[in-house]
Image (tube, rainbow, N blue to C red):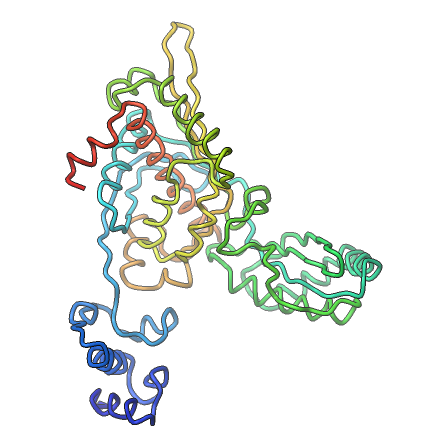
Length: 408
C-alpha cells in the first residue's frame, strides 16, 4: 500500500496535484493523504471528517478531492398512511437536517394526517427537461428550424433514445427569442432523477438538428430547462415530477390536536402563503416546503441543489362546512418540480441507500419509474405535514413557545 505521507510530500514538492492522488493509490489512502495535507496547511484537526464508515471508492462517482465525509444527523418521521398512485400503505420517512424542531413539527403534522385516515398523493406529470440554445441568422431561419423540429420529432426521438436503454423522449417544445432558438426536451427517465441521462440524450439529438437545419448549437443548456434556479417555467410546465398531496381533517381533530380551528388555519394560509407570497413576488406560495424536501434529499441521496425547484410549491387550505354546521379542514400541497430518483447519483451511497431501504424504495421499481413516483408522493405528504403543523402553530400563536420548549 502506498504511504500517504509519501503522497503528501509529492504534492508539496509539486510532483502531484491533489486531484491526481487516486492515480497513485487506492481511494482511502488518497483521501487520507489529502486530509493530512489540509490539516497541516490550515493548522486544523480533521479527525471527525476522516471518521467515515464506507470505502472511499464507493464515493468516487459522487465526489472529487475527497478528504472524508460530512455527517448530518438523520431522524425519522411517521409512520403515515399514504394512498398514492405508486405509494400505498404506511411509511416512515427518513430526514437529515441540522434544524432543531423540524422533525418534531413534521411528525406532529403526520400524526394528525394519520388520525384523519391518511393522505392521498398523485404524481400528475413526469418529465426531466434539458433545453439547448441554438444560434440562427434571424427570424426566418428560426422559423425554418422550428418547423423542421416539429415535423421530425420521431427522428430526434430515435437519436436521443439511442443513448439510453431506459429514458424515453416525451416532448420537444420550441421557443424563439430573436436569433436564438431554444428546444425544451422532456424525458421520462423512469426511476432515475435523470439529469445526466437527459443531457446525453439531448446532445445526440442536437447533432441531428445542426446537420438538418441552419441552427448552430451554442450551449447544451440554455437555462430554459431550468435546472437549480427559481423559474416560472417550472412552476407552470413542471420539471421532474409534479406531485400533489391532500387530506381532509375533521374539525374536531384540528381543535384537539392542533389547538386551533379550520377557519384560523385557512385564513393564515391565505394571508401568509398566498397574499404574502404574491406581495413578495415569490415563486413559491408555501410556508416551508423546501425544509422537508431538503431533509429528505439529504437522507435519500438526491441532488440537494434541486431543492430550489422543489420550493416551487403551492399550499392550499380551505375550511369546508359540513351539513351539521361543523367545519373540516382541506389541506393540500402541489409541488410542480420535484426531481427525485431511486437509482443513480447519491442513492448508491451506503447511508442514503439504507434510508431508501427504510422506505422500501431502493433501486428500480416494477414497473420502471414506480419507485421514484412513490418517493415523490411520500415526500409530498411529508411536506404537507410540515405545512399543516407550521400553519397551525402560527394560527394558534404557539410557534415561538414551541421552539422555546424544545430548547432551540
